[in-house]
Image 1 (cartoon, rainbow, N blue to C red):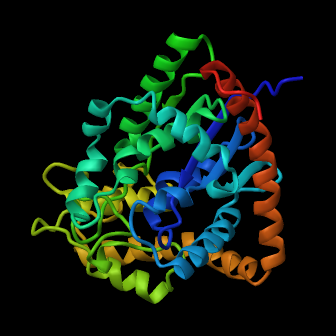
Image 2: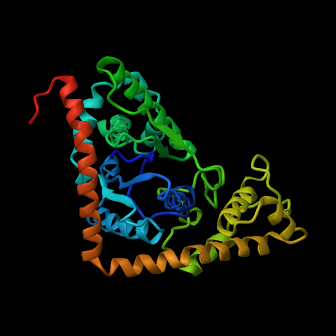
Length: 333
């Protein structure tokens, strides 16, 4: 009998240490979905190759991310956890979809423009065509929903366009996915440049909090976080981006509403507020860091998780790939 649950697919590149933004914006929400949905979560290691990686570091980060996924509550029995490159169908369908993706569509992708500006000496073909690979990631599993931040919504839109184009030519082949954007904590901004998203590629290390960072380092970063001269804790993203970002982080870490936070720090200076936010984040991340470190000591277990995940993902992906190959006229292997 077919699984009656709707299917979710999402992933994060193991190109560096996971950030607080990765956790609050994505992974924490993933863990809450496994009872209601059929969940596939990948480590998008093929996508990292659009930027030059240090091979040993990429392997280390990939293993660490497997451990962190589990430490964040992604039960490998309830969720399919897998490494993208371990399922060859991603690259195979990615090439087919390259041939059904228009140059103009790819030219309009915001992230291509942004990454080209940041990596002017390495504007490679993969950087240009990776939305087609991302579409393959999603469409292989006939995903109903794709949890994404606001900045990734464009990738789901082009995926839908590619799927509709293919279905229009060959009949019903791909399920058309919908973006799933969590309502709170979906976009955590840099502590030093609150107009920019918190990112592991941030050139200012003080702006980014990492999930596995030492408590003293986290507290120091929050102590130096950018606020304003108003000395008033109030949620106003347009006029008070730094304070509003800290409020959003505090709300996500503590469960308090913005109104409760404003009342709690009424008449207080920013020093007390920043200290409280830092402490809340430290306590939120402490059990995750400790469990990740414990899991990293058990390499055999982690290997069993990603091997099993690849087998389960491959079975689902193979069905879609066989259907696509047949429809475009490729002989069955």
